[in-house]
Length: 154
Image (cartoon, rainbow, N blue to C red; front, side):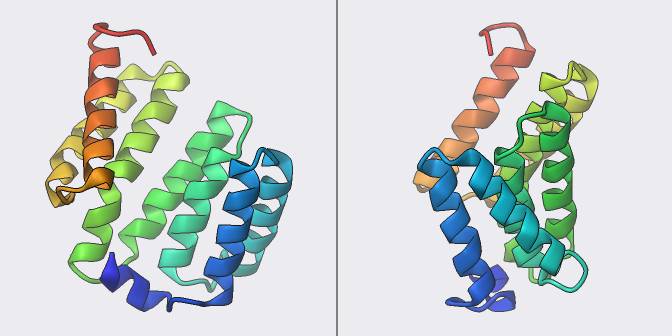
């Protein structure tokens, strides 16, 4: 994570704007958050730092009403993560990003694609730390695995 942040310096305006929109979303104003994030995406889509594009696409996915739109944004976040440099940076994001793509495929009834992305999430999970974030992502991977196996309802 530290290497990724080196590509997008702390305190920069893009991260601040992303954070403000995320706070709006968490506060219940999904539409305004989506509008602000979409406007920011238009500004950085071509020339923005991969870290910015990854974070922005990830949060834009969370604001979508249509499952296909959500999946498209999750795929954009994953593509941006692939552009990150440094050994640790992409590996730290990949488990969660693959998990989000897997969940998106499942919501669209695309079980085989969901299983493939979930396998990638499991493979990448070794990069997660032994901390609350890592524990949460591992738990979510397990839960989606159980859903796909029919052991629990989504």
